[in-house]
Length: 248
Ligand code: NI
Image (cartoon, rainbow, N blue to C red; front, side):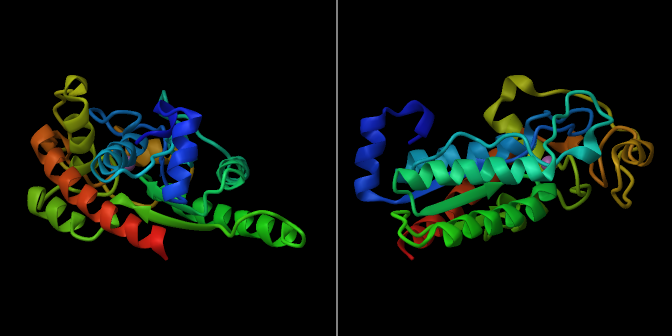
């Protein structure tokens, strides 16, 4: 069940059965020569939508722009300042809380978002504490889950791609997007076959170190079939974890 494809009476009815919602959160940033700019937003969206269809979980619109400063030397990347992202996440959370949602499960697709998401949770909780006296606000809990850390998912990725999984523009994440959008597949020869590894500083330095955008990966291995296997494992884990969080 997707919020943006529902009517308000349907959301009102859902709230009588559950106070929990899944929010995919990601980034719009370069993902190497054959990866889609939306990869980090699409992965949690694809997994979240399927979990929602299978288990009747309500899925919010995707928070699809995040912390991508270090990718800004590549065309198409869009980024938020950390302070902007924290403020926007707080407004999303307070909007949902206003309607009675009490459990926000943020399914994340971008490692660079983690610190800012946790800072946003602190900001959200501060808002609730400072408003508490005389407030009608319900209690609110936020949780963060990175899709690749869902139980069992990394085992599937390692089995599919024992070599060249790497750290950015990985064959696993590219496979997930190719599974959902097979028409968007791109055939690109990778040179070198496995991308270099190294530290991440700012955008200009990033492009000098990692000229085609990849870090440590060979995403030319990506296939829709592999993506389907990863999504199946992730959906199963999300449903179990979401239900537990919703009933806490
Ligand atoms: Ni990514």
